Image (tube, rainbow, N blue to C red):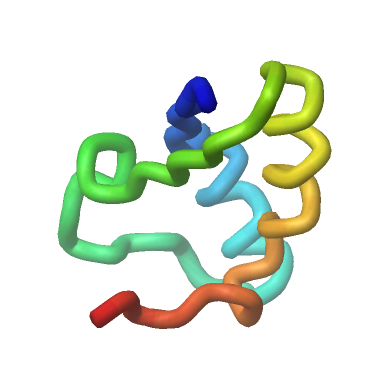
Length: 64
């Protein structure tokens, strides 16, 4: 199955973080290269459907 790679959009992350946390976003790492979401799906359309469900940081955990 094809793999679709997604990366964060830094400006959107900063905007959303400021809106929710009321402070500037400064993680101390380059999130555009450090964060990578890979989805295996039959098509890009199916991959996007999966990706849309993972936009909330509370749905993520560190993978062993």
